[in-house]
Structures are given as C-alpha cells and as structure tokens.
Image 1: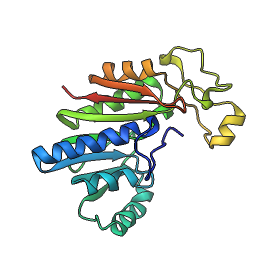
Image 2 (image 1 turned 180 degrees about the vertical axis):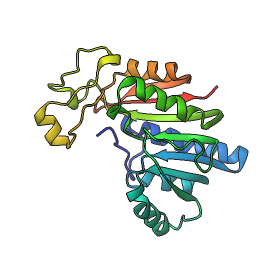
Image 3 (image 1 turned 90 degrees about the vertical axis):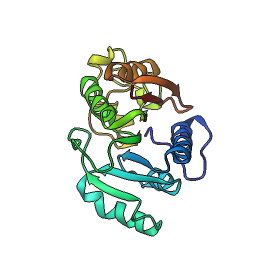
Length: 216
C-alpha cells in the first residue's frame, strides 16, 4: 500500500521517488549514454517502462510466475530489448543479476514484510549491486499511515517491530502477514546502517516513507 506511483501524476510527494529516479536516469543518459536500472518488484511494470523509455536498460526482479506478464507488458510497450526479467524475491536476491552494476535501483515495496535486520541485509546486498555513486530509491509502509491503526508493534523499537496489522486493517489491505512499519527516521537509519550515504528521506501525504541512498 506504499506504492502510489501513478502513470499520470509524477509530482506530488507520493510520486517523488519515481520522479527523482526518472530525472536521474535522464541525467545519466546524457553523460554515460547507457543507464542500467533494477526495479523490484515488478508491480504493473509502469516504473520499468518509464525508465526504459528514458533510455535505461532495465532488469525487473520478481517471483517466477510473473515473468510472462512482465514480458507481455514489455512487448506491448515495444520495449522487449530494453526490459529483462530475473526471478527472485527479497529473501533470495541473485548474486549477479543481469545488467549489474546498476546506476539506479528502485525498491518499490516489500521491505516491510521483513524484520528490520533482514531488511537491512537486503539493502546492503542491493547497494553492492550499484555502481559507485549509484542510487537506490526505497518506498516503504509508514508507521504513521492508516496501516498503524491498532498495529501491535506501534510502540516497539524498530529492531523488535514485526507484528500483524489489526484484523480490520489487514482485511482492508489484504495483508495477512506480520509487517515492520517505518518512521522516516527508521528508514534514514536503515540506509545508513546498510552502508549508504543518505541523500534524502520524506513522508508522503499518506504517511508512508521514501528514501534515497547513494553507494559510496
């Protein structure tokens, strides 16, 4: 529910990471001529298609059953040569996915389904797949969003905050597993502890959190 990217609206806080990632792609394209990007998970492939249309060679990471859907969307967009699929989950990232090292990684959602220490390890591993100076754009569900209403982990420190949503919220958002909701400071510290230089963090109008880290 932290994925508020829209095909027609890139400008408000909810879409800020998408806008900034596209701006970064355009800037690097002018300098390097070829930009490599990883988008994980696929979603509806909108972000991957936008990056590819701006000159990037894009790898999309997601569970294997979605491969045909991603490839069909790339085909429909006329971008088969620019978008490739790699089967993976956040718990099982490939050591050397195609296209690495990347200029840009967009992690759209999913980290909150992991305990904090596992999420930190995932971000650390993704940072190692970036070029020096490459950027990772993270979106995550917020501790101060609607999802926190009745959330059992609300008062726990981030290292221990892994709990189910309230039954009403879990049913509304179809989330039936424990989650770790983040404050903006929590995401800042996650990036820092994973080894990134933190470029910025922000909280959206929906209460979810976004951040940008740089590999140094």
